[in-house]
Image 1: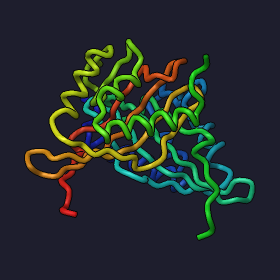
Image 2 (image 1 turned 90 degrees about the vertical axis):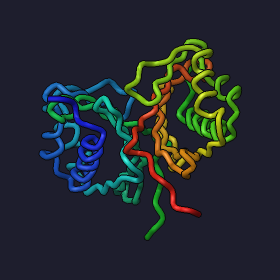
Image 3 (image 1 turned 60 degrees about the vertical axis):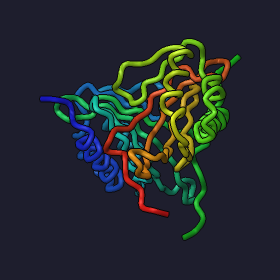
Image 4 (image 1 turned 30 degrees about the vertical axis):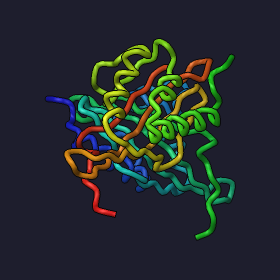
Length: 131
Length: 131
């Protein structure tokens, strides 16, 4: 099989955000290759493999509801990679907060995530005004 | 010297977009380290060094006016890297077009761009409606 096309990368990455929004950890982890690596935030040592990745998402998404949505189109390359801007909303210390993130992903020939790097730091965290 | 902080990465990357918008090729090239690499679009073989990089921007920006603006915040890491979503508008075959791009950059200890990877393909190109 070949790596996913640019269109397929767009579908896969949008699906990832939907699954984060749904808090469906099992469905998220299924998107990863067995030996995938995650650097979230980028700059931290990578975590590797589905077991560690599952623990990472349980820690991040297991405690309370997180909303996630794309804030622009998935930019997809012709070598099975892509980058996407999205926003995560959560309650943090009782306060509604938003975090602007860009995820960069590479995919394998089975259309599974091989590497994920999440670009963000506290400069991208904002307290949200009440709706 | 240390690598730029997350705040400094945000300033540097926003400045880069301003210089692309201004079409100021010399000022853009000055932002790069001598042995920097550019992969634009990501997936193509890297071009290396200021001379090749200058030629690349002359080809892209020299022919006609290009507008560029950030479409969201620069996501900056704590290891001197960042990613940003932006939109480039140009006239292409007589038609107003827009290209949605995400640039990922790493900086050196002098605050110069060491690597630039631009995520986009034709799936991110759209014909713009008249204003």
